[in-house]
Image 1 (spheres, rainbow, N blue to C red):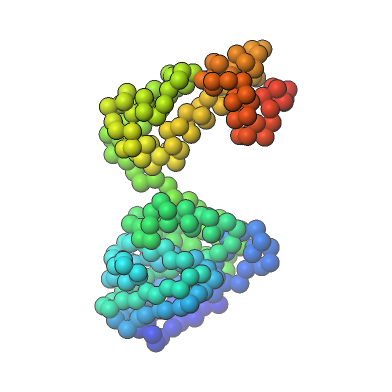
Image 2: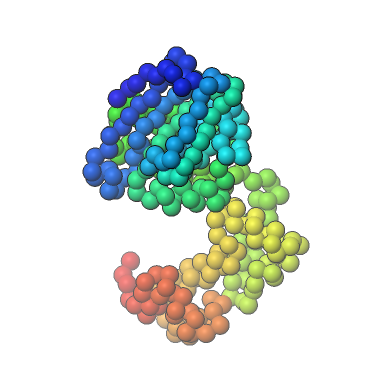
Length: 272
């Protein structure tokens, strides 16, 4: 349903669109509750105890105040509306926004907050995706299409920021070092030292770029090599454990089963 609004500091041309999800959408999909485009003057203010949803609010022009933040042009606010919240403008603002929920929205939203904070610089691609999403809500498009658009936008927001050439080179060098030494007793400290970097700085940059800690990335490489040995050779489990850098058969078997759900021997018997 389309509503044209005035009052509460909203100027003409402000619109909002409600969306009613099915029971299936509520159970399986991401879904919007409402979305809109507002043109606000200095009287605009929203204060709620809760509105069960998560809000993405993009400032197209002007500024919006929220908590200790002032969101300016091309900045996106991430607001957990399950909690008491207030946002407003003392001047003017043009905003695009959507309230959504469903699926694992809580987990994704909290991951966004932990990685990006409550205010995110919004690229032109992000803004265009939000516009397309709002248009989908306005047109009452298929729940599957709308869900896919919400998920795509959230993943786009989660993606690491573009790195400079120095950082990209560092990450590639680290990956190369790990690939060449995964069967050795290497540590994060040794990898950082090989790159002439502090351990903490290296670990932070590596995780930002890959979403894995250096140690988890090393373990993943060891696991993939172990799978290769299991499927392509007749090497005993103990030898594979040694060749992939695990310090004992027990540690190798425990980690392999934890990650794959089956023991190395059972994995070896699976047909692909």
